[in-house]
Image 1 (spheres, rainbow, N blue to C red):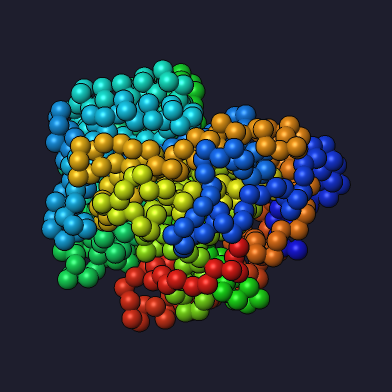
Image 2 (cartoon, rainbow, N blue to C red; image 1 turned 90 degrees about the horizontal axis):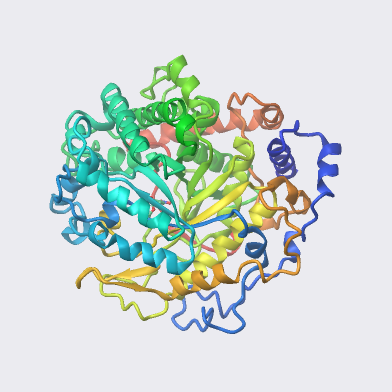
Length: 618
Ligand code: PNW
């Protein structure tokens, strides 16, 4: 029932109608009929999806009977964005060339013991020199979108002040080459590499400095590329930066409370302060874009956030659902509630000490700038976990190459519904999704088929498409990643690319089997479904009949937005249904936080991961 109300509300919100008006919902339901998702043709069979076996026979990207799941076929056409993603520090290299300034990742990675095998991003995939090959790979793959990030210190070596013309030229050339090959750039301003000069002034902890510097850097980029770049991303995953960089100290700037690992830091206060300042900087950069550049260039802007779908191990246990809801509010609501509602989830603030706690308050101006400050929801999604009390997560499903990555395609579908319900059906781009294949190490043989990755992508994309047919306003999918790259603290020991990069050779690129699989998928789309054309492109609400069909039990109830002051009728509906849940969630959160504080310095949403069973969620 909860789920039905959520879906109705979301679909109605998408149409700008008051939720709960069943007459209108039913009227809309008959306009654009689509096949109920349960009857959609799927390609899944045991032979194809053998994640943990060595001998997968299919899918062969060259097979005559190549299979495209019907949901993907229906959704992934027309203006749906197919793309690939990378990030500057992970692929560029050229760390000390052409006037680039030091970034905090140059400094962090140079300290022995911080990155696996002493790897650094000095050369990475060498995209600073081989970018034209990357553009050709994208064009040949058939994607029409490329998401890359700008190295702030390449453009502004000191973070502020003088612009490095050679740095800017690199991005100008890249953008021109992409457009020439029919590929639309999506540009991210900050994917974790902060100019070291700014880090030395306090980095994200220095609110006034970082807000000014980030907004001015954004202005430099809007001015330089705004005539050709129409999709901007301010920040990539602030949550990962504050958790890994300021709580655990495992990524730059390497701050935490544990003095055996970190020279400086406070694992409780600093993540909250740094995260807060990232939100304020985002708000000002968006404001500058909308007032000073958008009238001239047009374009859209948003932030990218990452979340792990959380769900109970025991689906009948309401308290576990509440805990899952709290964890997602803490992980993603921390950064996305302010973008839609102008403030943090109450459950987060209360859990970290309320008004007197270390989570700063937004000023009235900041709240105004934040509310409505993204045009689209950028979602990086990889994995899911179980919660139980006490909150120790357990990854769900077969494990990928990374210790934190478990294969849970259904989690993506659920997550998309959660976002849709909480934020009123915003347009969503999946800005990253992909995996590292368990048997691909540094010495991996690129000619060995990466069936694990193909199965992962196949299933995740299908679940995302099913969510779209159920009413989620999904508008694009960017695979992570085009290239094997510098996987942060794991260095080159993990490979997320659909193109192999030879890190011990000359950074030579070799497309993997998954590259050919995606290429075939894209070239086959629009031909696989008898229902093709019945789905009205761009109209998520059009899929209401599918939304009304019961989701399989595995999808679980969609938790409700319960404790936020949402200025819409949908919020009122959510609030009535969710008041009890909010209260319980806050109480439970406090309880959990108290318990954790005794033995730990960590934030309440940090938890160890363990592999658990797989069947329940799928
Ligand atoms: C993303 N999780 O980080 C980053 O945006 C990329 O730079 C990175 O290479 C990629 O994912 C793969 O790690 C994530 O715990 C970090 O769910 C952690 C999670 C997800 C994404």
